[in-house]
Length: 427
Image: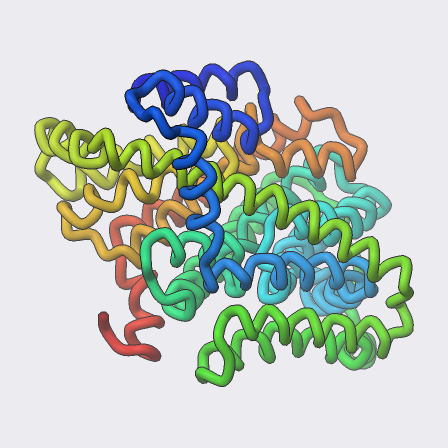
């Protein structure tokens, strides 16, 4: 069954069938060619059981929060404040781009929201300042990787659901890695600025910094409110998503930017994105059930142990595998397929599940900036009106700092587990 399932899925992906349809068609085809006589009853049952989980209710709320940020003028205020802080540095607007992504990450938790909303502002500002359009688009998609690492994160909510881990622990585990990715990209931009002339701008005065901080203070408080309420146990992850939406609506009214039209636009986009994610989850649960019946995880574990029993060698193979998958399959469906299959292997090698969650999260996130399926590349190419090929070439050197952080996180697990163990205690 596993060969039919995986083979048909890969074939459909190569034919450019949408991920949600490819997973569903591969699953149904495998059921129909197997010995299950009641396939039409099993598939809906597995799908409904898969999405009927309380932890998944956090997903639409964080999607909604990100969409509301993009229609209420919050992203512009975040960008203006970051520009006042670091815009005067060498390659200043590139540094602003990265810092803005780090701040925005504490609100939306989605790389797509970062690329589409904040990215439009960043690319426009960089082009007007004299930056090459392909560089502006490339740094935008590279920095968007930060979004789903720094909590709240939709991807980490889904991983916590799959790996049966605490959402709060996963959120805390992603904070340090997200900051490390941001710092690595900033260092890369600074080093590159030493060899290449970038447009510069004058240092903002203390009054200008204070002005942008005052106008953006309420927006900047959003990450602190969301993260603080989770970390100190005042709310659950789902309640934090509701809190984020309510706060975004408050900001929209306060800034006089939120209209009924914009609100319903954000609501419509949220419904569409949530529906797609839930369809993928439902079909993936059915696919995972088939793989479990076929004992694919156990067979994979036995085969891997026959190759190597060395934990470090296994981690190296795992990184290569995750990155290759991320190049052709989007993060959410890839995680839904891989996590249930790889967990027995992770446990067998004694790897902490929280640590593995951050590894697979960042490894697959790099895929959004990697051809041929990198969705972030397509978004910034469209938003920035740059040819896809140019963005792809410009982003390649920016992948080096991302790979460096991924390797660091993989082989120094304390960078991931230190904060959740400190605040929540060891598991």
